[in-house]
Length: 635
Image 1 (tube, rainbow, N blue to C red):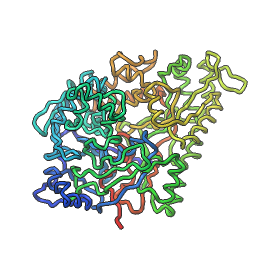
Image 2 (image 1 turned 45 degrees about the horizontal axis):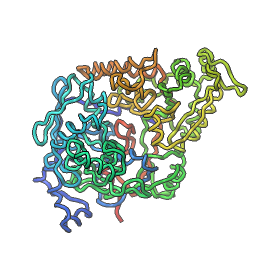
Image 3 (image 1 turned 60 degrees about the vertical axis):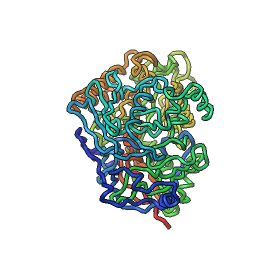
Image 4 (image 1 turned 90 degrees about the vertical axis):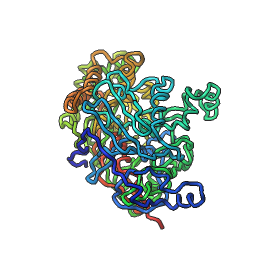
């Protein structure tokens, strides 16, 4: 279970310097595979590939070079699993020695924040290079800002997290390495937002403020003709050049395009779809360990395709996985019992996400829309769940019956919110549903909607391993006369259905519950319980669906506007805490269980996998463990 501690280091908005190592004082070492390339004349020496003062990652233990990290993936839609292994930003969350999440410098030498938090200045590492060896400079920042961020054909709507108060951020180029990001109002949460989501779409690995101009300009309408753009679309097999951009874009998704220059520790070698997707080390990666060894230690990562949870479980039991937490959906006891057979051990990580039922409060089913809009119904659906039974039968008892609210250890944690409407009380649920006008039942005992149809909810899940949980949820709800129809679908389709407003309810992990302001959008309905209303908010009513009448959606939006313009963290947090309370007390999302042990299978040959880390999307989950420091024993 999660220990009672603070998971986030105190953050001061002052100038910080990256831990740096002078090339004049150290001799750098590299992987033997790179030495071979240098000796063959196909790669410059390591001193010429690294920045003048590389960023230092203090590894838990200085490791050995080489080897292939074997893990698994479920298909092209599983792109975020590999991506989180290697994302880089100007600032990123990394685990400190005590396991707390700390903001640390990435590929920058330094940064500073002005007194009123309206200007943020960043200086890139001197000699920073893309994975193809080309210089990475503020010319790439200018390209991102002027030709991508402000290009409405690529980014139709600038997200409110990058345009607080409705005014998009501005970028001023100071020199070849230094640039300043400016806001029209104070923005005390900006650094944490950067560390979580970087500057967002339209890429997959999302480098902060930077796109490789020398490569991507050929797919940009400022630099390429209509004929050239059409030819590029044809080459990549998409309908329009704009489809080349985005986290699924054929050109800007590293997962799909081996030619895309990156700043990450590894780059794609064999893209999806493939039986084995491979990533290979970036010879120009800008970080070293404390002894001057260029990171990462591991040469390649191989992601083997698996068809279903049982196939992955078999791979684990047979010792085919070197390190992985994603997709580990069998009960904890299974993995523990197979440690010796599979030559691995479990490194416990702590889950911060809450498995939750997410009703679509923007549903186009007008009758269901009215039912969901009644707070009594949402309360009934929460107290009508036998959470303890679900935890006992599917989680080996290693989770807590909690609400979708900030988790223990978060600076925004409130015990009453975590326990809000979580006590199992089917009698109260029956009473509330009767009071809400759902007091008529059919011959099988299921309640009838006002239009005379059975009160049935199709619940979508994105993993076959969820089948048992969905079955138990259906049994709980049948006791109070609500029919649940479970549907397990492809993860990509699950995400698309949320975006396209095509679902009654989904069963997903509701996360970002540690440092909530780093990504408040999920609590505001984005890609969640009211995606179309969030679109309405972010486009100032030009598109999307207005918030349901009588809801507190507008209050939540107003509170974020207030928090994102507050002159101090203390004032911002006051609004943030009110936003969180408004969300939880309305029961817009129904938490089932969370704060459990995250299964992390680690081969006995794999080292530097830090235990007891908090797993949250805000920290990019596995990325918090600094995967570039992982190393494998070499035979």
